[in-house]
Length: 194
Image 1 (cartoon, rainbow, N blue to C red):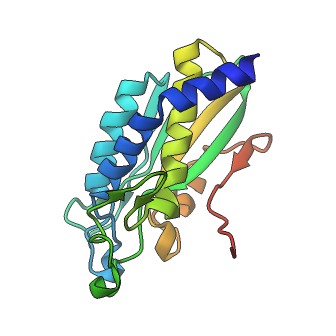
Image 2: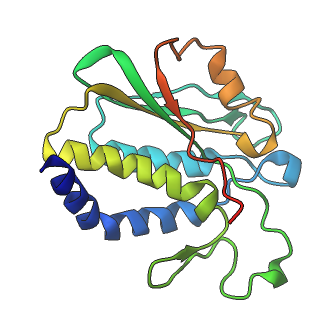
């Protein structure tokens, strides 16, 4: 019964998920190695989105990087408290995207001007890793909306610099001792050959 109710709530949230994905896709988050200015603008938008969901706690652990105009590479954690304070389920996604590449190859839309079709959102970073980022946020929103407290605290990590080696992202966070030995971790960015 709960599973069916949860899926119904997720279906209800679909228009908001599509809107959120398109809003985030419009903001280039390209590393300075590739001529970009990093993830700061996307992180600002993400903080607005997270603030509306009603997470129990939101934290930032920015990494210093003088190559970007803000001087920081943002890493954001959002927590939805579970029944057990000690046990956490992490979903780790990333804010950055690869460069647009040859823009003439973008025949349906410009890279950072997402196109919404029947069941697709087309734009740079939608699949890698925008859709997973948005899915994690709205999974938490569905639980919150239904008043469901998960067994484990749901901890969402939105990291910088995944596309260029993760020095300013997950490697920076590992130095903060945020992750515990008994935490469960999902990284929905494994790709698929098909």
